Length: 307
Image (cartoon, rainbow, N blue to C red; front, side, top):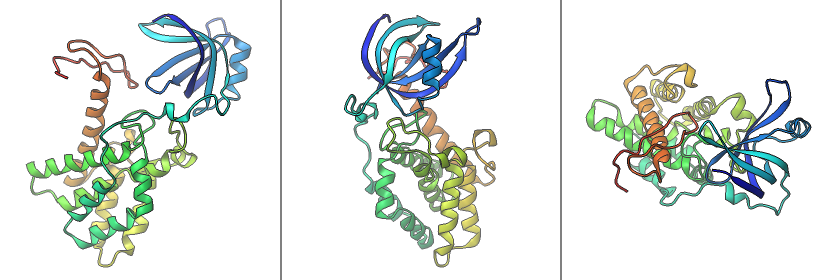
């Protein structure tokens, strides 16, 4: 794709100051136009150095003049004129991905009602009190990796619940109550990891320093001991499942899954993430064609899927 761009607004996802082989500074930008990632470059050294000290992820830029080019089979925006956008020059909602058919918040209450053990049900009722449930239903599941839109956290969580139920149907010896409870709780820390008011769902300082796995575990660790007759061993099991749901230390889990239920939760969480990523990549791609490279660097084949 080639052509000129004038007076367009983009949200900043990432930026870094780099240098050419000759040593000249340039600015590498990853921008978001509301529907797709855009690679941007500012080649004027003085402008690049000035912006690098002022612009942060989550800011919105007004690109006055730029030109589309192709580099390594990927489109790239070479920017010659830009500045921070002023209030009123853009609609923050244009950068928020919208998705139709999202489940209602009451879906969480239906899952809670289906849990038979009173202490687990009470724990979940304490956690998902009305105000928190409202925030939970409006939150993203990620900045850009998966379910990265308002309501994405709720959608992802309910997918994990259903995948855990599927595991129980195959392996009935798994503890369904415990799995359903941990599935609802596993990403609760994302309420504090991401700034839902940011146009690009930037991570909060606590999110960067601690991460949702630890923050979610700490929140539940404070809550379950206040529930009457909550078995200590079961509380420990819930904590373990929250801490291990990413599966590996290099993926952000302080511990690896050490119980069958913890393994099932991790696999359900991973399946929801990976299948969603693949479906997003091939959305709108003609059957038999390949997707563009996604944010993880992978390409997906649309195959013979019928839409």
